[in-house]
Length: 229
Ligand code: ADP
Ligand code: ADP
Figure (cartoon, helix red, strand yellow):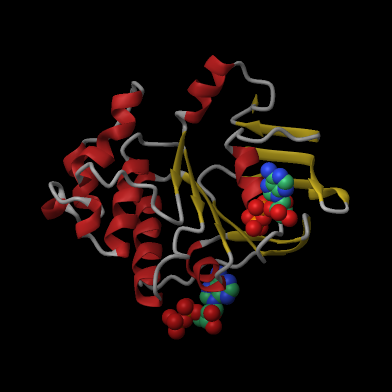
């Protein structure tokens, strides 16, 4: 469903140009829970931004759902991004908006044919009683649940998670991994998660790329542990 072939991305570094992604090929299947792990600077975010069409490769192709996403017009790009939900390390919530307003924000910006019901989504993430709270009144884990609800409400085909638990403690990390697993069971989207935490990979991902300095040095292919966290 998501296919990168021979993707090269170069940036200007202190000692001249270097490859943040050095001839990367990866095929992610529909409904897969796919991980990308690596040290800081290994190219994980660059790879995620390729999928979101926020970066264009210097070489190679990026195809999603059979569509070349490298050469989209601005209108096609807006249409394409409607398929994608994003979750961020720092949650990216609007602090002067309530939980309800944060979660429904995507629906105010674009028309989504198959958007989910806000009460369903808030109940799913366990925040029905917090809909009139502000982010400042929530714990880190609750904030990330708001972030997940905001991503889910558009019913995305692809959920991109950029270090979703890196700002959270161990117990809260387990909870958020559990929410993402249940989201996948209920809504069945393709999940791509970037992380530097092996525990997240172990408990969430079907298959994982290990990146080092823009190269794939390994793929981990083990079923996530079946017990519910
Ligand atoms: P990761 O997400 O694994 O930390 P990144 O994909 O953010 O890695 O970055 C990979 C490498 O590319 C790093 O060396 C980073 O400094 C560099 N890099 C990322 N974005 C840019 C940019 N816009 N301009 C220059 N260098 C960049
Ligand atoms: P438990 O239920 O006892 O916590 P798990 O089912 O979580 O056990 O995992 C058993 C062992 O297999 C653990 O050491 C765990 O780290 C490892 N493991 C589980 N799932 C994965 C995976 N997807 N990739 C790598 N190791 C895994």
